[in-house]
Image (cartoon, rainbow, N blue to C red):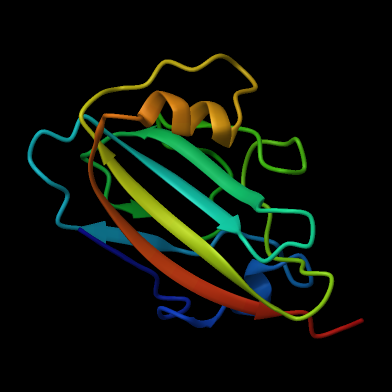
Length: 150
């Protein structure tokens, strides 16, 4: 399975419009090679370089396997897709905003053999817990970002 973006390549800098210094809109993502037997997909975007532990920027689950693209600036989730809370306590995408230095942002897509049941207000930790034992494949894309303005 492969995860790609037309906005940036693997280990390339994330364009400013996808960060809190810009428009803070989600980057366009697409994937291919979803394995047979996939019943849903999950997407996690996180920053492991955050000063107080990994910061969750975007957490989606129950993406139907018939979908292979998430459009840029996604505000309204396509039918069926659900969102967990990010580290700001909100659902939806929150762009990079590192306090200092160049941070890495890991976008990871998981192909799952089940559709997940999670309570309203679930977190990435809840998602990872219910995904355990259901992952058929995963794909990753890493973007980097360093603040332009102090």
